Image (cartoon, rainbow, N blue to C red; front, side):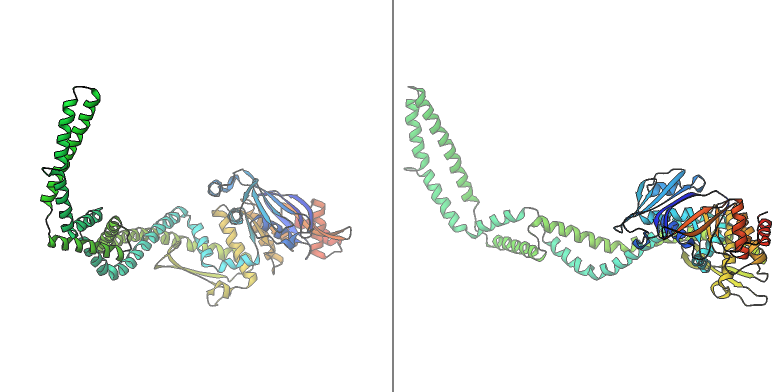
Length: 550
């Protein structure tokens, strides 16, 4: 419930602070006194966008602060999800700076407007003529029926399953779309894959092939040079091996004379061993080197194939071609196995649809059970509100469509006159009738769910006498389980409040200001007497006011 409201530098309000009680509170005041200003300030607390023109003094900031007692509202989950600091006595503050910047705080924690709006919807329901139009909304009508059906847990279960179902459907549609595109590309991808597979690619192969190609392509020159090297090493008279052998013998004879000669002997001997090994290797290379035109053609063809593939696929080496080949294998495989995947997804969707259908059937039956009760209660209340011939025709039928709250389609029809035809509410009911119907619905809802603080903004417009008296009784009854405010021009309603506040204008230092003051018992008598008889308070008006208050 709203326990206090402070407003500084907003519109015609300079500095206002007021404390509120639970139960039924009345707000009265002459037309133009500033009731809309009060509601405007309160709307900022609930997340409405700020307007720089709202500042009374443009050089100062506007501050609006409201204190709520929220222990009974089950708001801890919302506070956690929005990362608010939960306090049973929660303070919401809005600031509008002269620069035009607006800030919002919940328990001194900065919050954005969307989060504030979520919280505001759970704290205060400001019922204006605009909100009466909610009555004509299918969503609101379902909310009323579902509140009476008391199956919130079933609805939440349905919504969770519907999320899963939609996710499965989306994945299925994407699969079908992918399959359609994949089929177009399948033949081409298969052709590319076959090309890469037939190339028998081996990582690092290019260097080996290029070396082999150079060898085969220059075979005669290589053979000539190897023969020359073989001769230089092994020539019997002047070959390197012959000379090293002679040198070795020389130092072998000297090695016993000094360690210096022995070291030279060892070095020559090592060189001889190395040269002998080199001689053998050159001989092996000569023996293994044969001209092979066929092999040269094969190597040349393989290199050309690899280079063509690299150019075709914009790859810098064989490793990139292998990656591309693996990707193509996956695409081709996926395409060829899509039918199985699609069938599995179809089975999942069908299973989930069966679950949704079962839950929807429970929701449908629950709604059917409570519709007669809702119809009876609405028509009974409206009789007391001066609509004795009001009738509702509320019908629910199952459809094949999964809506956000089930599979039902709702027909909520109304007739105000006996023998009249039924039509949609927005066509069949006048503005005054819609207001009374909304009041009836709110009073019914208050018995079934924990509504937030509700503020009725002149819901009694267009009614008087006994009907207004009954409207006051309904709001008074609602105030037993919730905090109710009524902004009213009717003395019959004003007299029923537990608390009474008056909005008024006054001139201070030639500046008009709007104020809100709580009336004591005597002040209430005068205020209600003025509402009855005008600004001149007569004895009969005073007596009538006292009678109403008693």
